[in-house]
Length: 209
Image (cartoon, rainbow, N blue to C red; front, side, top):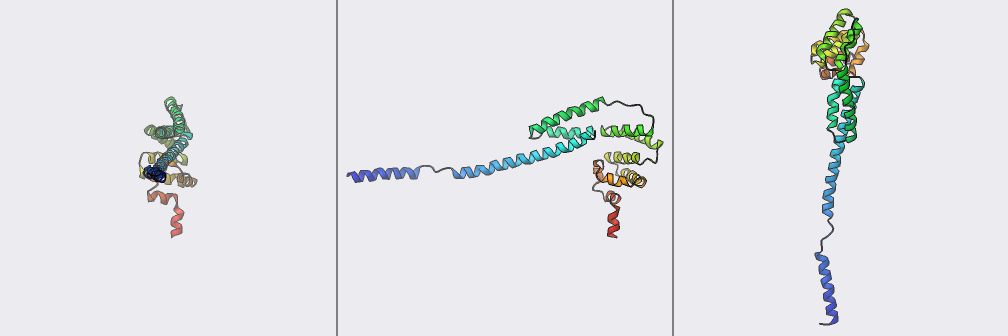
């Protein structure tokens, strides 16, 4: 075999080796990239939902509605964001302390019973709250804020008819209660009821007529 043939054979061998070597795993990289992207997207979505829960719980906490804030903070603890979970745990501890340390003040006037009734509503002790709001109402039957609180309590208890009746009276006594009720989360139970919409937005009927 000549030197030229030997050289050609060696070159041919190297060329064959190149053809049989494995290419860069481009397809594998492409297939793994969407997987990482989907995982990140799922995490971001879960974190966003957790943040919304935390903000909702914090808003209730700031107005001392501890009984309603507490279960939301518990759900935040189960979320993906550890920092939010730590914050929720701190507020959850405060909720428990506030609910345990609540003491009954001396009640004399309608305002005393009203204030106490609202505080009991915020703690989720609705039967006791109703008792004190009823006492407040008997002592001051024309106080719109007491009747408004009674409407809110009715709504929290799922008593739609009584809630709308009391709310209508409260708005007759003080029309500004209509605007207050529009953004009051205590009336969330009635948001889908068309009768509730008619009470809160009478101007819509006037415009349509």
